[in-house]
Image 1 (cartoon, helix red, strand yellow):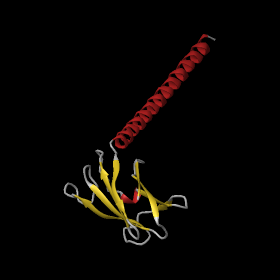
Image 2 (tube, one colour):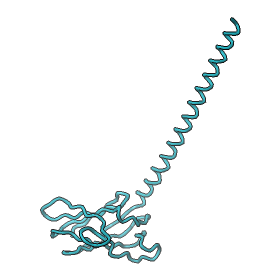
Image 3 (cartoon, one colour):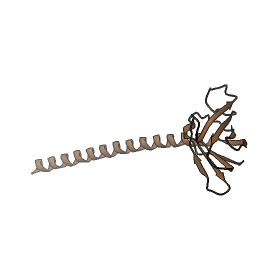
Length: 155
């Protein structure tokens, strides 16, 4: 009888040790995942905080030219992730996608001065975009960066 009680106690202790090990390893894994997620969110947040744009000038009927200053501390080269909206006096804003080949949409016309990283809209540089849209006359434009920062102006 004493041997059976000793074996049962040993098995109980072994099960407790295994359970504690599994819980501890799961907690460590969960903590590591949370720390990684927090680092990623901090990086995204600092990128958003470092993003600032302002529309410097805009003009046009036919092709519309809009010059946007990068007044933040982040550069952009993913122009396909930027959004442009135009509005005329009678309708809701119209979304225009990036279309580097021309046609309906918008394309990069020039970046000035494009000296630091060519074809990247760096801080302190002015991006001029050409917007081709059917309809109009348009009275308002809004530009959104990949980080969600926006600037708008009346034409």
